[in-house]
Image 1 (cartoon, one colour):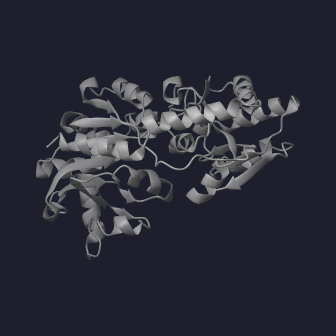
Image 2 (tube, rainbow, N blue to C red):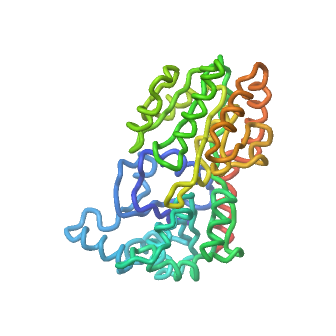
Length: 363
């Protein structure tokens, strides 16, 4: 098998382990070999095919500094692996991997996940300029293809100056699992407690529903800088549970009993918003309807009857959509449609095979 270098500067944050690995699960012609500058408790299968630049060497920290800031020794650090293509994760990862690809004469593909396209600060001129800004123009010139997890990411990168001819949409899939069987009695939210996730809008919508006598159990899975303020905003909503971070298995247990997954995303003040939340794809594959905002990276075509899309920031519209999904008999049909849509558009094995074929096409 030929080696595909997978560049992720930190290998791998806990929140990324599942969806990062799924991208390569169906590779059979390319062997993914992970490269980065920080070891972050990688799973065993990745640790056996991984290299941290300068790791184990006396001057390793200096080597990593020179590699990241100047690109010095980038090619030498991985030349012995005889790679044939480089696939970088996130825009900044593409900038860091650029010297490797250039020094070894390899084609480079970069996947943009959302914030790396939407956050304005990544593209605002500052002094001293960070690595991404310094190499952005060179990345535009050299990179063979920019892969976008959603149409929204593609549209934003066109605004950022990326030629449309270099942009392709390739969503990250989710594994096919058995359909949830219920009983269905709760609404579920899962994600970091940050501005773009839209939690204040969800809590406002839940108050509207409560005033109408609808108080289904609500599980808010996750944590983050806004948790304390959200707990304060939720006072009096006794049916809302702040569950903290859940393991994939624990989250799956919640989805097994979910009437719907709620994705009330908004555009943050810094321009950041969703690419395509992996939890939405996972919920749809379980047969769970998704109620999402227009800033969630989902659209009616992707949901294909498996959920509803409402205007971002509109608590009344969100409450109305949730009330509809909570109506007797509605959830079953939406759940079946969600699963069918996910199996057609978001199956991990299919998306992974598409990624491999695209990378092979660059050789």
